[in-house]
Length: 139
Image (cartoon, rainbow, N blue to C red; front, side):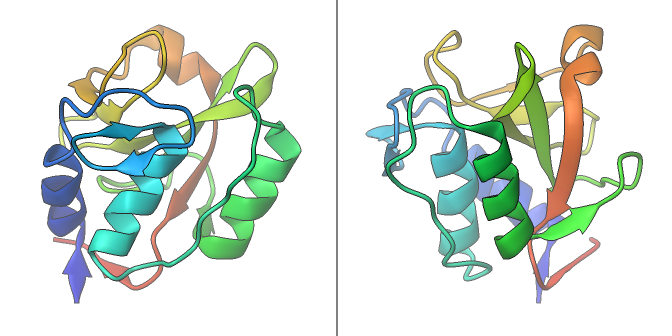
C-alpha cells in the first residue's frame, strides 16, 4: 500500500526540476500537472495524464480530468499528499501537493522549478478543490 509519506518522498525527489509547459520528465522539465502525474505514475497510483492543454489551461477541463482520475475531497478534508487545485485569475489552473507542515510542493512559471513552499494566505484564498490519489492510506 502506498502512504501519504510515500507520495511526499517521491514528490521531493522532483525538487529543482525546471518548469517546462507539458513537461513530464524528472530533472529535465515539468509543469504542475506533470508533477502530479509523475508522482502518481512513479508510485503506480495512476496512469492518468492530460495532454495538449494550453499554457493557461481551461479550468473546467482541468477539473473534469482530475475528477475522472482522482478521488474528490471536500475542501477542509485534504491531508498531506493530497492534490490541491488553485485558481489563477478566476479559473482553476494550478496544482500542488499538500505537505505535512501545511505547505505545498509545486512548480509554475513564476517559480521556475519544483519547490516546497509555505501555503500562505494568498495561495489559501485561491484554493478551490482537493483530490486524493486512488488507493492511498494515511501514514
